[in-house]
Length: 340
Image (cartoon, rainbow, N blue to C red):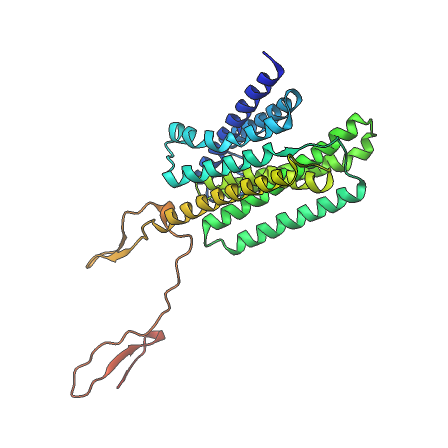
């Protein structure tokens, strides 16, 4: 088996592992909605973490045998693998709109990454590392705050959290490349320790935030968002700080921007598809049986809205006998008043 073939095989297995981990994370989010970030006591969640770790390891090994322009686009197949795997193993079928959005996001991302041209290996200096870490922390926190503010819209909240996770994963990859370059240059460990700490923090934050993103939004939208935002953020840093560029000059840049629009359109399609599905969920109604207790219609609890609007207490008018039109009001403490 040639090195190129081995890189392709490892990339495909890595994408399958990532897809399996995402499916398990989404199932954990459905079964334990009260634990938004880290259901540590669920064994299946740790299996998902193990699959994600395996996917990351295989991806790194694939990069050692194949070029970045081949391995990175193959990683985008995670979205395409996840949908049929979810339908096969957990009976979670995706509609035609979800498939179109996932394929658009995958094609756009693959095209964008295939046009990225790597430069000579270089590392970030100390000032750039501090700047990138602070900007990343600010972006992740801002996305989480906005996601919390729109918690009444689960799909929008999910996409925002998935974007935050993608930013964390993408910058973790940037620092990983920096550490690898420093290692090859025989930099002392004390110089690499801060970067290793940043990698650990960002990777952990990405895992926990991505887990929260699967709550109430299905599988395709958050997974596609993480899969697209992660390499796009890393590529943006590479273009601005690592001296990377797009192939074929201005024409390649224009085509790459077109692929970026296609990927963004796929994400928008996935988001609107999930919003439409959420709006189609029946709202539970309440009926009162004559002479009996209150009974609710048979609607699954997970389909109920998170918060029901409060109904203000108002006096109830009742007709009274007599020549004049009078209304009986009942006040607190058991007192009554009759007025016109």
